[in-house]
Image (cartoon, rainbow, N blue to C red; front, side, top):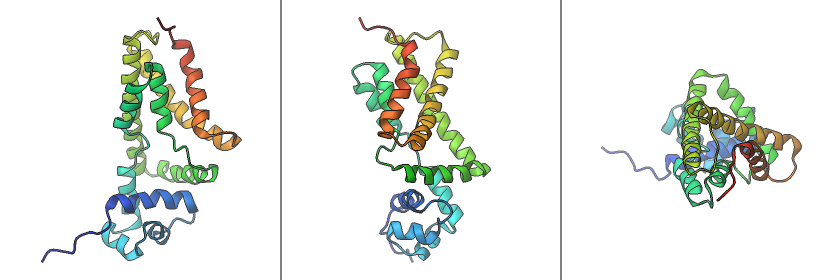
Length: 200
């Protein structure tokens, strides 16, 4: 006999993981807190995923702050490709996240880095981000808007931009001045400035 149809999507349950982490932090993260944000019972989560660890792994597999399609759209619709790169990276930043929520997610990142299975998922996500950044950099260079010396420099700059994406958010969380998206934008523009070529 077929089971009852699922009335709550996996996407909703996995989104509740992120919201619960931001709300209560790692130390207080429980299935009950996640269930509260999802609007379901703790038993429903266990039935769907088996355990807290499996739920968190499912979230790690599905979660990505970098949407390739959205990044491509931001890049393609910008007035010039260098601005497109900046917009694509800024789009990956949660502009509405408070410093406290960011701190809670940073604590979660620490746990992921300490667990090889989670860390490997993070590494693959990072590779995808850098691959697309390198693609955008190549296109900007082909259009004559960036001065790059070759593929090695493209890959190095892609890695640097990804590092700035992470580091600028931490700097903002410490200083707590302005909006995080503005901080990330300023840092990216500073890094890209020496590579820019004048329009025309």
